[in-house]
Length: 338
Length: 291
Image (tube, rainbow over all chains, first blue to last red; front, side, top):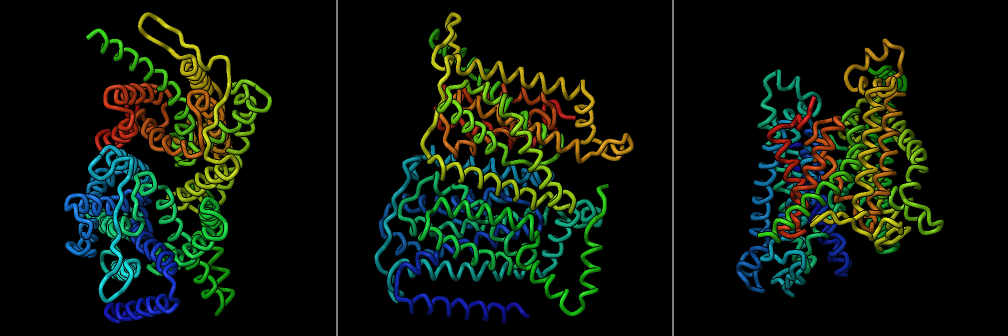
């Protein structure tokens, strides 16, 4: 499928989703839907680095929070309560994306020369360094947090949460299109070589460092863009919750559950896990919903290492000719440790 | 000037004491991450588990937390061996340890933490022991016993570990498994068994480190997160898999953190170890005493 056609289909689906949400006629749908859409962006962004390149980023929360705090900084700088009228939300998102993208680039530059595990630990470290900086930066509220007043109405659309939902929906579409575009371009093949064997890729002339820097920058920027509208959603931004590990664990769990090799994986994972969490939060408690994510994540990486996509894939491949399917599985299982 | 000199000495001493505790926390990660190459980011969660075990026994039976930790260490060993078995079968054997193995431990971290929150709530828990409270004074230097005791026991623990690693057959096999598995097989040793033992020992140290933690400060389930980066920072700074290096790095980070919180305020302290980590990774990835 050509990318323009894919874009049109995505937009059509997005329009359907929006129309459906409006048809329900309850603002809660927008509040719950916004969180799920935000995770679509986060998990797709995580997957660009984690799934395509094989570099695990534990610092998703940091990039997300950077986006959120750049909005707060602009809010405080202009000092106007009707900031969205002066600076439109897309511009705020762009600023958040640029800030997070730069930090992503910097972090990649510092750590990507090292093996994968070090990169993962360095991202964790980065999250804490940034959190400490924000906690000590009184201008954006410090550890006390910052209040953001949400405007009541937006012309043409209605309530502000509806507007936020729409903006996030478009960002989700954009990130899916970007992910799919990367997957099918030279860039995507380059990423795959890094994931499968970085040394061999390097030896065959793939500019691995450059590609990894591109991946960290795009991934960071998308996460920052997802974070930029967050202060307006939540109303009260506080470092310990904005840098919370639940963003990190969700943006890892969702792609891994869905499947990491394709853009569909994070989407499926997010819709499943995100809806489940919304239901669990409402019916049981928010602590239980985190436990649920942990258990599902562990179960999936052990039982279905390639996620839901992997399950569907093996099912499809086995059906036409069972014998070939079985042979394939047998050769896949390595007999010995080198 | 005299006053600030006192402050400096006290900050350095308390940094060394807390460094001793950090060394105990890191020893387990030095084994699993440094030697076995298993990125166990759930290690701090097991430490918190150790704290809670010490707390329960102390609250119900009134037994000393360190004694409890020594008694329950074998149970932690079994837990660790079990986890390694799952890890080996699901990830190492399939060659998927990098991405999914990390996610596995991240999930374990979450499960442990949230289970503790659900069961005990987020209240701070503490233990009672005769050495919590009094302080020894040597001139101007004050040494709280609740810091001194964990520091001394932790250094003892690391000395024992180092002796085991360098003097016993199993210990040497553990060191060898990191370097050449094939050579180990040729000596008729099963590398998987050695790794299982080593990972078990690594989790067993978490039992003791947990007891130290709850002696030093009250504990609630999410405290462990603060230690994730710190522990790996110390491990990398000291040089992967080097216990003496870990002790030096732990003391160093302890002193710098203590100086930072004394002179700049405690809210800046967490960034120190992470700054160190990023710096080490960028400048000298092999660490201080790296192989």
